[in-house]
Image 1 (cartoon, rainbow, N blue to C red):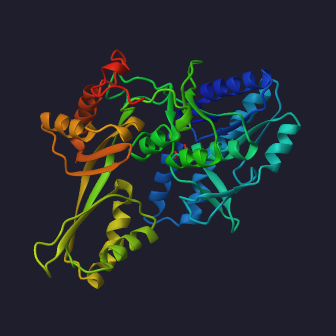
Image 2: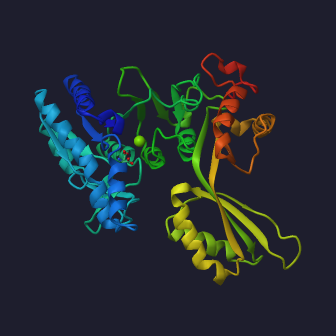
Image 3: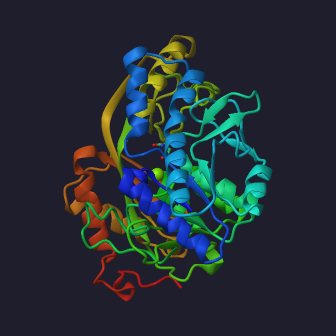
Length: 414
Ligand code: ASP
Ligand code: MG
């Protein structure tokens, strides 16, 4: 059972989470709970570091950030004990979460779950601090924003758990963000492939890595509300996916920045050098567009998007290699957004891209970049048109509560 930050935000909610955990134990299940930091704690810790240093040391940053989750676990263990059950809280390190050495975005390399197993065998409820581990060089690491989801999935995999329940402040995974689209529908099931595309294109319910990890290790994820008992969304293998409509969801993000390299020499190896340098700095690049130079010997332009939070790193990396690569200059746009339609049924049905582009065109929304996968179409648009784009696409594909699947413009795929 994993509880997100809003589900442990104050004393009342920690007690409610403790009650929910205890009820599960009382029903005869063994329970490991992974907790996030309370409310805005992680943001506050980041701000504290910024107040001290403009470039905080990454190792110390992880020492700092990992405290938020420890607080939640210790408090919840107290609450569980007051309810008359045995409980023990563990840091990521104590829980055996072993990671690589990349501070603030470490990857789990191994889970040595013996200590959790022993505690369960003694009848304890085990609370594991999310979002953290210990590196192969014995330093505390954190797993990147939203990383408690990955802790939960990794622990579930290591223990061969029946299910990994992700408790959050929404009822499950929706066909679009309900704050933007009031009639967005809660999805009963969603396939790993779709969930991966959704998480990578802005859906915030699950951290992308947690979905990758769950798919690799075959962990069943149930994403549900911590505020009510209702079923949420189950992430399943595509073969078990019951609903397989053309389009499953419209996702979006307003945290995109576009970088354009102007005057890029048209010679082999330049793109490799540019993206190699970005990769070495840990910057994830999303869409890439390169235009052909007009004539032999003239120069090309290259545009790509990165997460807004990576813009500063990306610029400094690129500024360091411009001259050496003979690139004329760099430009950037901080306020870009992205809207994506995702659906496994797209794979075998033509016309989805045409519908997306026509729908956006009719709203006067300009598409600046496009990228596709077999089950996703993404368009970069200006950040201030993202909400309009989401609403109009959700309606165009009839994804809402009162629009049944059969009304989808191309019919259901299977
Ligand atoms: N507390 C961390 C964050 O805000 C990890 C998490 O909540 O999953 O990113
Ligand atoms: Mg989260």
